[in-house]
Image 1 (cartoon, rainbow, N blue to C red):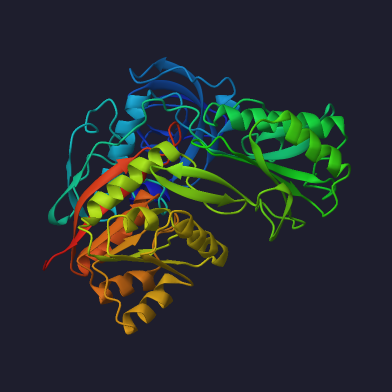
Image 2: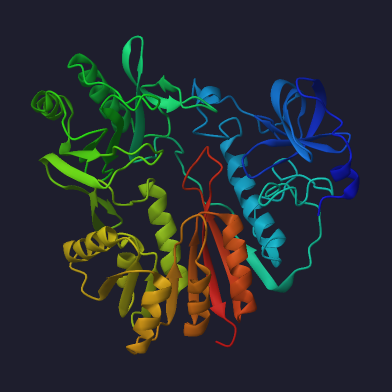
Length: 507
């Protein structure tokens, strides 16, 4: 809890005032944490161990935000960001932190959440505990400021932890942590020079034109650049959020790393595309590898990219790619991991933690288009996948057929409703695999897992804080968290994925 001393007093800093502070940690957003007279300030661009000069931008009762003006004493882990628009874009948050230090920081962030939220005893296996890359110290003045706000800050506090030690392995990173994304979703807008497309400037919906993104595959950059140029030349208008006029809202590109196939999706504010035949012909002629050109119609005044209706303007309704030796059909709106290199690492670890011998029955909750299900099916007796999105289940079935994998069965619906029905039919899983969204598992699904009581649970997580919360529930229900493997799916950002091996205690 926030101490009454801090909560009740007037903040000792003023907006627009400048201060010199020591940075004592990084929070879960990659912001440096500094203090003035015990008052916490979050500083974008500052690193642990640095002395910095700052300007206060916003002051709340218990914490504030500050702009980094000057680094007086730099961290040994500070590096020059490779991207020339890094500070303006915001798509990457920690390019100024060396890659080795990023991996160690993400490792320590996972540990911190497991200890602080999950109340688990953790043994850090390898890198991640050094002071240069640790998450710093905390105190009563910031702990509990708001839900999730202090995640990643703590390092010195002792927690009331239970159970055997959980091994957290070092984060598995990439040999080449650039150009790893296979999907680009680029907003379009208008400037005095005409149609532009790139990124939203920080804190606004003003679109800044951009042709190069160093975490996108260079083919994605090339395709977006050509589509923008063609659209300008044939006078395709861009959507204006304020007036709700104009046509082109987003250009979405999907690229198959292994196949070289390209899908272009034009998200439009209306059905009719002027000069559509010219646009399609030029995309086909000028962009190598295009196999699919689609239109998605979104007339809603919303930040959601896709509307409900998708049309194929030319070519196939899918492109194909491979993860390992499993082939996948990827449609315009289907979810497919954006880093195929690290996806293989992630899924191999999930199969390892499942401990399959060839005879087990596995349930894959949140199965999506069947990516993990098909990996598991190569080593299991039977796999059942469930997903709430019907279109994803259609893709999953198509992907199973595409690979000649017959020992899988997919159902559309909520996992917490479908899985009990399977139990009534006599389906008794040895292993349940979950790969939930950032909000974590639905509480009813966790209740269902405890009721089904499989020997093992494999949890694939994209959010350490909700992961820790869910692990606490499973631990209290008779399971033991054995080991955790962080995987860096999104280098230079604050995100980290984990695969967790969980064992029923009485097995």
